[in-house]
Length: 253
Image (cartoon, rainbow, N blue to C red; front, side):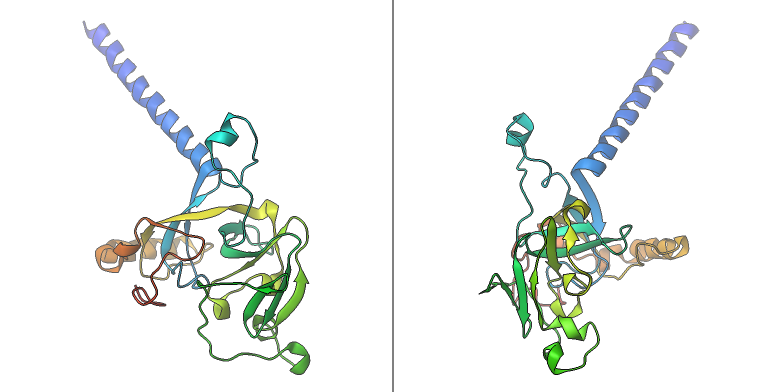
């Protein structure tokens, strides 16, 4: 009887172990190939994505499209203008950035007095925020350092093949393709899909030491209820905007 009980106990432990192993494999597969969690670290995408937003990144959507059963089952497609993408920063690939796609391969981008034109046509951008009333002149008319030289007057610039011109929605406070160039297709990780949690606090940078991360966890534990932006939970990140002007105005929700 004792031997039978031991065998049954070992069998149960083995079932739990196998179930846990399968779950770990599935979670890692999903993290690597399908979804990734990403935290918004700066205000460059405000007011659409705020500092402290935790988003789900769809890594599968830009996969290779085909006519087979997988291609028909999943809505795979190419990167489109207006997509909010997460990508590896070209000058520091170990760091992830989030920006909006403005220019596609072959496009010509021009910025005049802060307004963007693509291939000679003004781009309609209801999502854009300008929080600096100052407009800097064209660089040939003034000796300006960066970021002022390229912030409000830029181009014309031809986007190379296999590259994408990306900009932050908070145009006066964004480090983007105006300053460091385009994003290679190979560095794009996926499209921002959903805000699953939003915490109204600026956390440490991605490369912060362990002590700073521990302090951040303590801050979250103490202020979880009061600083969570509950209205942003499960918001779908839309191509245009996912906030309501006049209701969740810039910097306040």
